[in-house]
Length: 406
Image 1 (cartoon, rainbow, N blue to C red):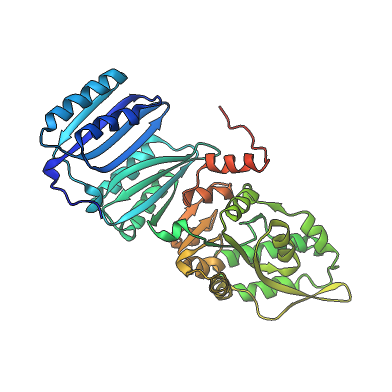
Image 2: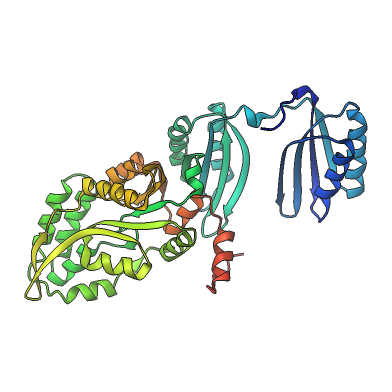
């Protein structure tokens, strides 16, 4: 434990100016001569502009230290402020959250509105970090002083008004450990719906699409809708499934998401109301650890219009999530679920973090976080992983990253 101190005997030294090597070393050399104890330190550099805050115990002759600090700052060509009697607020703010904002663009008015709602909760923004500036702008706020459960509904409502995406997560050790990602497939990991692509071979794409939309909005039971749609596929050659697979287009950023998190030891699962004939191949191609979907019955080289076994429906997706978490050996609090339709709701609610990705309004309202930009890898920013870290890792592995826009 750090030494207990009387805050009236603390000094807060705030140094600002153009950054250069040796600034931190010079300041702490001054502190060393005074024999003070370091209580807190934080430093940021923005466009080569340094802000360095240092909280230390005050020596008996604290004014002598203040004068030495001011002389050193002047020698460095920097500005400094020394305040006496500043408490260590870190010890008091036990409720901590990470709040991620995504915007394209991210307007100052939106940041102002969110910051205002945080203040309304009696919370404080302790630190702000930029996670990415393209293809979306992403910033993370480190907030203390209010529970995530209080912040989330208020900030989510404000994000809707401002037209930005926002996620509120309680600070937790799970955020830094091995986690399990469970994802829907159709209109999430991939663009479009596989069953509609198969239906195009049967000449009933429009009818299938109509039923699919109703099911995703939660207007009809998913299992009932699936059996209705699959019945329309009777007689389609099994070879058509190969053509469908070849025509699949992944969501932008899907490969980056999987590649980056696999490097960090994450496990992946896809859970789909679609079909194993497609999802198993997709899992093998992307290096996804687990897959669960429905199996189309095939007899004499053609689809029969029936499904083999139980349907993977809304409850089935949540059950699969729990099963995979147990197999990996992580608690459900360490599971991240991503989906877009009503049949994903139980899965999103079961996970520690449920993310609605370009989802129907019903799903966005129920999820912990919503991402409404067409880049699946923006989920990485919600996990505290910056674009710079992603690109550095890709460069080390020989991947070429397109240059960002100026």
